[in-house]
Image (tube, rainbow, N blue to C red):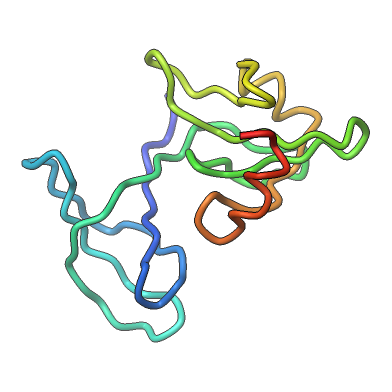
Length: 122
């Protein structure tokens, strides 16, 4: 069974935060997180990014919103949740994430590295 984990982007501190507890009562989840840089804890509304259950070629966990790089083909893929599954999208083409993960590495995410989104052709 796949491990269920989430993270959120903290717009104020500009850092990714692992979610400790989430409340799914509203369309936008309220989460409890410990901020990595300061160690402080807080509750706020955020867009969740879910762990896909897949790791890249280096063993790094892949989350929704991550950007993957295929060094050989010099192509970037964005990880998305689409039609009930996690996929990797490159230049508008959808690929199975598990297949792409075997040949790619996580190089960033859509929040910390928006310039890579441009290079992916989106």
